[in-house]
Image (cartoon, rainbow, N blue to C red; front, side):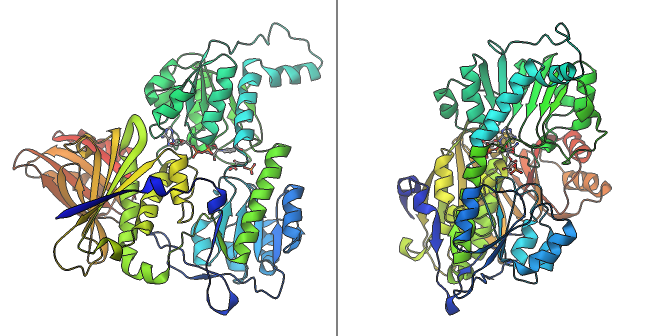
Amino acid sequence: MAATTSTAASNLLTTKKHLSSLSLTSTNNFPAFYPLPTSSRRQRFIVLSASLNSKPTVLIAEKLGEAGINLLKDFANVDCSYNLSPDELCTKISLCDAIIVRSGTKVNREVFESSGGRLKVVGRAGVGIDNVDLAAATEHGCLVVNAPTANTVAAAEHGIALLAAMARNVAQADASVKAGKWQRNKYVGVSLVGKTLAVMGFGKVGSEVARRAKGLGMHVIAHDPYAPADRARAIGVELVSFDEAIATADFISLHMPLTPATAKILNDENFAKMKKGVRIVNVARGGVIDEDALVRALDAGIVTQAALDVFTVEPPPQDSKLVQHERVTVTPHLGASTMEAQEGVAIEIAEAVVGALKGELASTAVNAPMVPAEVLSELKPFVELAEKLGRLAVQLVSGGSGVKDVKVTYASARAPDDLDTRVLRAMIIKGLIEPISSVFVNLVNADFSAKQRGLRISEERILLDGSPESPLDFIQVQIAHVESKFASAISETGEIKVEGRVKDGIPHLTKVGSFEVDVSLEGSIILCRQVDQPGMIGKVGSVLGEENVNVSFMSVGRIAPRKQAVMAIGVDEQPSKETLKKIGEIPAIEEFVFLKL
Ligand SMILES: NC(=O)c1ccc[n+]([C@@H]2O[C@H](COP(=O)([O-])OP(=O)(O)OC[C@H]3O[C@@H](n4cnc5c(N)ncnc54)[C@H](O)[C@@H]3O)[C@@H](O)[C@H]2O)c1
Ligand SMILES: O=C(O)[C@H](O)COP(=O)(O)O
């Protein structure tokens, strides 16, 4: 057995310009995209319809900066129709090759179905694509592109504006003066200087908020299990645990994406851990707060004030107790709404849409990583395996010094020249980044996205003896210098380690930490560490069965009989919190974790 090592980081592209687009040629003058299949997307060959002879039509459905509109007009017929009803949108869409929206327009399955196959590009002039049905887009051969960077500073500035306005009761005092009152004693505020601000989510927006808050004389701490600690230290911010952040902060500012792990992360249980009198700002996504719990925390005096730009349902109901609360300041999702940001976003999205209509794959393409068909046919299950191992590994991280050093090992009997691992590396990066951020990774931007987040991916090849029929024997992903929410995932050498193989064309998880397991990577997975003893599979299975959660696969890996064992359980549905709690309460179970694939 021989090993060769190379460092992907050294090959990384260093400027965004270098990777802004990549052209593919195809037959009959039409550009072509090959989106990678994942378990949730049907594989499909996408052909864009912007023929070389006719100008495409772009519908701009929400207000867009002039510079972007002008850029589009050079290339396409532009129809600016704002405030369309859903029916009007469905009628118009059949005449359009592309549509550009912000967060206010729902581009749902009906829109794609109504387009009669003509719609080929959806441009989201901003970051979040919560309002675009991605699965429907991919099924209809439609590329979705977004503009992820141009509104970062605007969002951070809005966070700071809300922080200061809340502390000094600006909105409430303004309404009071306009109502003919002069209540100087009622609206005495609190100072920001010297106060502790906890920035929850230290990504693009969070780090800009932290920088600005330092300038205001605040003591800034941050919680982000995946952000590199040295990046935080460089701007004088200490990364702390979730509990420490919320327990010590005078102000909490939310900047994490909405994911299954962050949904309602501020809930009754966590409000109860906060310092009495805490003030909360949210310019991320409404869903990260349990809004009913926030009303209870405000009424109980745990939370003194809140300032919210985003809501679970937008616009929120007019009679919402939260919106109407006297100590809550609200804005209608204005984080990205500055002249400058909207000009920047307009240019970013116009360039991406024009590029896509010309057949280039933008670095901001959300649903179409691109793989040549001949590569895909052989590597398809390994491509899926790579993404899923990345997703599993990152979900096992609980803290430490951030996700920084990732080592990928490919074991294969193929000579290194016969196995192009570029796609696999991109898919591992996709799996590592997408569950924890607002970034979408494709083949064009994968290495750049990794570099931007401070991720160093080193790759190792293990050359196996034997027949090289299958491209790979196993793939292993290790994350160093981190803690895990499932201690058994840490290997003897101290890294989080997951390993997988393809069996009968299906990706399988075959190793977690030092434990051998065997579970097919479909649906989701529960990992439990237990004292090996009879009846454990039955006990866990019946807890899941009580809630009608279908078990697809179970396997137990153990060190020795009657010692510790790790049980991997594949489930088709997501168990409720109560069901997971019941699993944790089974006496022999020492730890467990639920992982979404
Ligand atoms: N209000 C607005 O108009 C507006 C504008 C821009 C962005 N946003 C929202 O702001 C949020 C942040 O955007 P961004 O561009 O900074 O995203 P980003 O991906 O750059 O940063 C998100 C950070 O959150 C961290 N994170 C993930 N899970 C976490 C967890 N459980 N706990 C703590 N941290 C966690 C990630 O590691 C990452 O560093 C997103 O929700 C985005 O949609 C809102
Ligand atoms: O996701 C985003 O980019 C922000 O939330 C801004 O959304 P908007 O473009 O609708 O203002």
